[in-house]
Image (tube, rainbow, N blue to C red):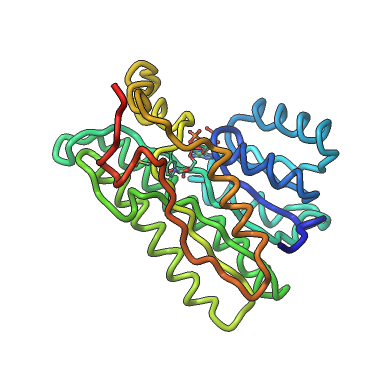
Length: 257
Ligand code: NDP
Ligand code: 8X3
């Protein structure tokens, strides 16, 4: 396991779920953290906690990953002490709705495509050139089992995660010959705010997703992300698919009730 001490790690979607858990595990390794999301208070609260608990330095970016100019300006105007990003964790993402494709809501489609694909591309485009110049770096994308298997009503969300899979593979190929690593971490069911967001705040419907199952936790995913980031520099973990023991595929879930 390599030491990440003083490395600069940027996490998108750090205000909740998997991104928040990643911030915590990386903070414990003595990194410097750049945390991005739209919800400023949550980022501030996390930064305060991490500073108290681990003495970690943080730099916060309040932005919407869909806003290309905001992403460009946030990355290009980072203070010199923060600009040499070592690890980019492209985690911000969401699903909206579970409608049949021919009945889908267009704003939901736009939001998923713009966040999960274009937002991830913007961060990658503005950060990876610096990694190539410095001859070091690691991009870790949050894909999903949904990028490998399409399920009923998953249509556009699954397409965005299939795009993340293709982007991770393409980036890996384009970076061949450089030491920059690319990993896709592709979970099944993880209990976060994901389902509340998918169902536009309908908590009852969101809770049903996890009923009778033991889902993965955000910490389970953060563990895997951290494992990938701490391998020897010549090792690239291309892709990890992880699911709860209670889940065998995107649609096959063992419910105990
Ligand atoms: P959460 O809803 O708990 O967290 C999502 C994070 O993404 C939040 O911090 C949110 O921050 C951020 N985000 C969403 N949209 C934007 C935006 N436009 N601009 C900036 N930040 C944004 O969900 P998860 O932690 O579960 O999701 C994290 C990633 O994991 C996603 O890419 C998701 O697709 C993926 N995933 C999740 C699985 C699950 O079952 N939960 C399984 C497989 C993959 P804010 O709202 O403050 O901007
Ligand atoms: C989240 C997992 O199965 O709800 O990507 O699409 S799933």
